[in-house]
Amino acid sequence: MACDPPRDISLTPLTPVGTFYTDTLTVRTSTVLADSVRTSNPDILLMGKYKDPLFGEITASSHFWVNTPATTAVEFGTTARYDSLVLLMGYSYTYGDTIPTQKLAVHRITEDLSRTTTYYNTSKVAYAATPLGEKTFLARPSTTGTMRVRLSDNLGSELFTLLSTPANQTNDKIHSVLKGLALVPGEDNTAIIGIPGSNGVLLQLYYRSSPTDTVTKAYSLGAHLNLNTGPYRAGFNRVIADRTGTPLEDIKPLQPIPASATNGYTYVQDALGVMTRIEIPYLNRLRANGPAAINRAQLTIRPDLSFNQPGITIPPFLVLLETDSTNLIKRNAGYELIVNSDVSGHSNTPIDPQVQPYNPLTKDYTFFLTTQLQAILSGRKTNNSFLLTPIYTNTLGQTGTRFESQLNNRVNRLVVGTKPGDLKLIVFYTVAKE
Image (cartoon, rainbow, N blue to C red; front, side, top):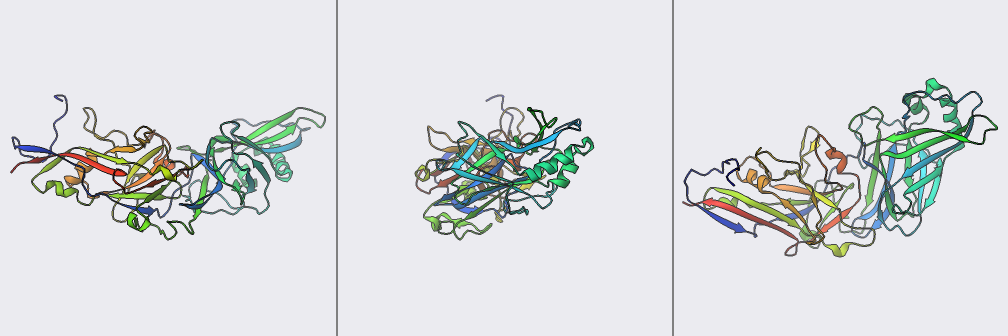
């Protein structure tokens, strides 16, 4: 304790103080739909469909460039002949009912993609009505996790003709012929899969060195997303919901629905932008009897697990985002403002943003808000509300994993009730005695 740096808690030196505890501060909750969710340059490509009695029919499709990873041109040879064109994809994420077979269609994008355009979950790009190839498969990432889709020989021959000239083996030339690919689910799909946005997709152009050669060679094109920089990382996920007949049927962007209007529940879903708003309206009452300082503040969120079902489970991690009366996510330098962890160590500065895991023993998520609530109590921050949203990794930071790419890469969902213990704020605080 002697090594802690001194802190100004707005009390006169030698002022008598008393320490108090409360777990009865009002916490208001509501469900908020974001006005948009950025899905440009995602960490994973989402494809599929499933029906959820609480969140509606969720449909995901992905759209992306393929690029050449080659640093030097490849000589096909004058006697080379086209063999086939195959799309290879690995996947490691599924959500929904994976027992029935799923269907995937690969379409040729007919509209230019842009790496400088911000795409959202509701964005659209045009693609050809006739698929380049289709695949029916069982979504079993734990056993296979790889798909092989034979694509149109017309496109294969077109690419082969282009790439047979080494000077044409550039991304600009490739994009002039193939503007991109769209992964579109079948109408009867029951699950959504996630394909890594980098090194998870390969477009293999197979050819033979001569008409009589029995061995094929491959020229590889790949998707290159989830990169901080790079001129050839265009793509996005389109994720939409039909909420007809669900508790969220009437939800509108940025217009909160109080828990009292949804049977005492609030809702959270990742790439759809459904968030739980948490408001602490009467925090300043801690100062009713004099200047106060918060010693410890802990927010515990216990999800209602009765809404889980096979394949549809809660997120592994949650974060709290800063907001205000507009219900917009507050940003700084293009990054979402995520509530920081409490002050630690000798630097007296916040450490990494809080990413809180689900604790299977206590069956809850726990956030430590001492620093945040003290800033509100002292007037350094004027907003007493937060937005609760899923995240899928506990590695997060502006210089590492990008905030925006972490808030739109899954369709995991969560239900929070208002029964005692579902959402609980505990505060220890010190008040100066008059």
